[in-house]
Amino acid sequence: MTPVQVNTPGGRYPIHIGAGRLQKLQESVPDNVTAIAIITNPTVGSLYLRDARESLERTGKHIIEITLPDGEAHKNWETLQHIFDALLENRFDRKCLLVALGGGVIGDMVGFAAACYMRGVRFLQVPTTLLAQVDSSVGGKTGITHPLGKNMIGAFYQPVAVEIDTNVLHTLPEREIAAGLAEVIKYGLIADAAFFCWCENQVNALKALDEEKISYAIQRSCECKAHVVGEDERESGLRAILNFGHTFGHAIEAGLGYGDWLHGEAVGCGMTQAAELSAHTVGLDTASVKRIRNLVHAIGCPITPPNLGTERWIELMQVDKKTEGGQIRFVLLPEIGKAVVQAAPLNVVRDVLHKTAVPAL
Ligand code: NAD
Ligand code: GLY
Image (cartoon, rainbow, N blue to C red):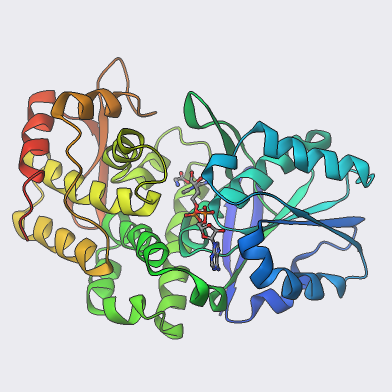
């Protein structure tokens, strides 16, 4: 498969996609690298560290392994410090390479460690969840969570390459696949109506991880994301459309406590709410709202939002990074395949919260 190319002011790099890429990681190691740190967690490490190490050993470089605890709860300063300790203890210099082997938590943390260590060293993304393959590994958003806010400390910092091995998806729990598929269909909704339609037709093959179909879905998702971040690396405008469904989704995650729903599940449900809001504000037709609900349901994500209480919903959504002057701004769809970012009147948002609280397929 032809690599997808990402071109941003902060870096230009390829995304390689295919079955068996884990056995070819050496192809993405720059020649002048002095040493390599593979950073992973016990879950991913027990499955894929050996293969990753074997391919990287073909470079002849010195290699160390750093294993971090698994889970969102560890995406913090303490874990980052563990990375820096290991790099300094092993005398890693400015020409080292960090390899992020894991899902979005590992990728975000390793990217941020790379941005900070000696004021910036190179890193390679090897995403192992579907969500990380289609979203978090691409575009250079890196960071950690502060007790007062998720992903609030970070940097835009691009990797040297992204290596996506579709084989690793087969060990993911079903819920993680559904969460990743929510981000896949998001690209159809915001940028490519034909791709959304293709996802509707291929939903069973995608859930079953059919090699040809899932590879195409990953490739098309990465192309969409590469285009958006190529236009707006630092989210001064267009990049905000990648947050379709996220204003509602973040409120679900924060309102229930992180970890109850997966991020992608919250985004999936949030997309159905944002679709309803789009019908009330920018004229999305009701047939499209129904198609969106049906597809989110079909991939296995929840479509009935939790009952947080209307005012609590509003309060949580006001914390969103897109809020300006107290006005909540949403990514909305005038039609499938086209996104705009604009404020919505609070009374309309309240109506939508009431309406979407009632399950109706
Ligand atoms: P995750 O990294 O926690 O991975 C989910 C679980 O799956 C973990 O337990 C992990 O160890 C396990 N796992 C990973 N690969 C596996 C495999 N192949 N087989 C079996 N188990 C495997 O979660 P995630 O959904 O990948 O990422 C969520 C994180 O990504 C959040 O912290 C979120 O903020 C971040 N994120 C970042 C961006 C960005 O642009 N940087 C975008 C979206 C999400
Ligand atoms: N995941 C949203 C972004 O990368 O901007």
